[in-house]
Image (cartoon, rainbow, N blue to C red; front, top):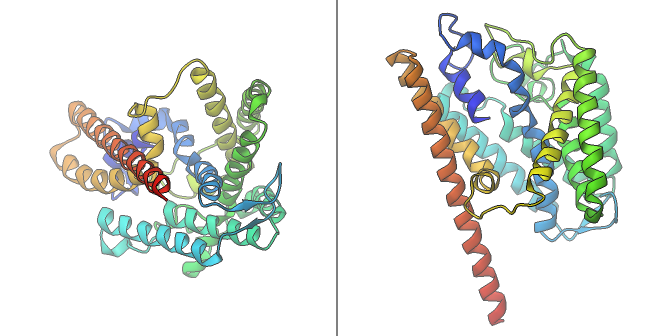
Length: 338
């Protein structure tokens, strides 16, 4: 995410059109498939939603598949939705200015998906999450050239212009996939070797089949880098994103099988603080890149920009781990004195 964002910020005008004379542009084109990695953010949001339900004390009335939640108020879930929406608008304001404050971006999209899934689970219609996700996936070829009118239409179907980066259709399918995948991994964790094999094989097949049946998983538009070519993919693009996620989970699990994460290690810090890392690196990176482009796009300038953003993100992650650890200690201390 950090690498892709930084690269595009340096080679575009206002994060939209490519500056074709920039030395980074050929590399951006060559490694465009790296865009699949930040496109996994919705799946991570679905995974985080499952973790949120667990942390919030929701009673999950199923041993294998979440169909209903109780002991959690709908108002609590609405507040979470409003938090994401507000944080997204604030991030837009501080990154790009007042004119784009209310553009639809990933944080608002995550909040909407969480609210939809929570509402369905709250009334015992969790199965509709899977039905809706499958519908989003299967209709994506027909929705590639369909765009919404008005703010709500843009939220659902995207826009041809700047200001709508994560339409509900088809990206809800990826959020639901992350949610159900985390649920599947959570239960019967003693069967991890079997699950590792399924993830590795299923992810590999998904990526290969997607590449065979599609000429372009990501379509690159010089005049609108974050346009329909990225955010209005067909079935192959969605399946490829899910496949890459499975491969990353399988690879990470294999690498960690004989290791333990250090509290302030790189992986633990970046994963724990992902939300605030996104916000801070977006605000700082968008503003810093504006001034760096005025200085000229020398290789050393670009490398320094990447290093600053990575170090800043790691620092935010360290702070998130520190605050989380002390919050847990405070809760345990209070409970021991009761």
